Length: 249
Image (cartoon, rainbow, N blue to C red; front, top):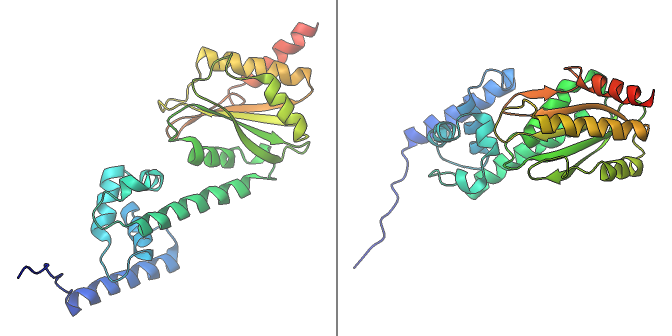
């Protein structure tokens, strides 16, 4: 008579080992947060939330090896994570939940904060939401008269050209949100944030359109692989504003 193979139960010693290890991870987090954790230990801690009575260290180390770092694991598709033996749909649910919570937290930090004092926070939010996109995506941040972000929208997707980004649509959205100023952002899937000639032309056109409608363009940020390019930081927004004023003379 054929019998299904039976799973060998863990020894009491093994259970005590991983229970003790989990307790040490929790104690370590309670004492110093994530600052003292290696990337694989953070993933291990997340996996323990969705796995009972099992050592999660091997799966955590394999995930880091496969996806390179903590960010890579958080951004990895659920189906790719589940290819690692021992990572279940519930594990990936926990990981994706944490990822989305981080995004919402950064967005809440961004909304209603003065942009002039939080450009790094803007980049942090954009990097998390745009860095790994496979297509170029053009995002617009709408700000009020106090330079506080009141809304963020994705408006265009695909290869961005002058003919693919419509200033009229952006202006209509700005009026709808009663925006006094704008920040533009898009990603470069190549990872290199340096602007192309086309990026510069798009930005110049949008600065001109904003000036016509008396809506200030504060910046255009290009997101690469953990790097970004700011048109404002490089003085290009100011240069385009001057070009527009010179045309009026």
